[in-house]
Length: 193
Ligand code: URA
Ligand code: SF4
Image (tube, rainbow, N blue to C red; front, side):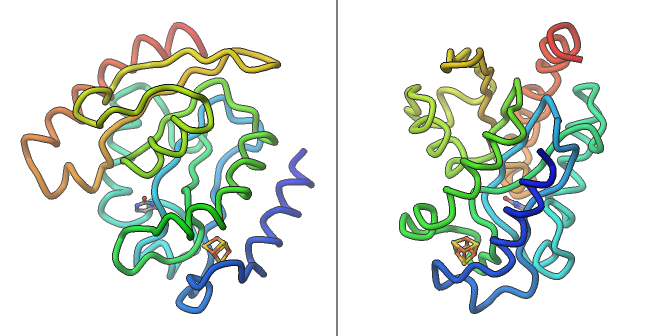
């Protein structure tokens, strides 16, 4: 299984399917145990992630680490990746970029086969809602809500959250994010770990 993940990583490292490859320093494939039960999906690499080739290593990443801790999770036990694998200088991805890059994410989800997926921010939420067929009305309405989705092989739980970076820019939102992650504690603790 992880052999296939490594193969996929190499494909991402060599990928030129969308214009974002021109600006990248290091593609950010994702990290975590190949058999993680919980998978986190953000938007795409920022400046620090592009330098290091690892997801969520900047300010938003520090906040994310605290949120993980608050819900009783260790960063090392979750798999963390993004919708888009190459540096997003403006912090947003076009529909074309998402379309070009998400076959990699689809394959990652297939290989890791998590029981629980947490989408961080609107782009991840939209991707997940299309893939798993739930209604993404707005982040305001469905942040912190857990959907149980039956796929052919199993039930997957999906929660979408405001992006941690949004909480850093907006203190009232930060509180909401902290509350949402706090509520995950019981769910993750009793059902999965
Ligand atoms: N923001 C993201 O969405 N992903 C990262 O990896 C870092 C910041
Ligand atoms: Fe390829 Fe994705 Fe990078 Fe675009 S963002 S070049 S599709 S890996």
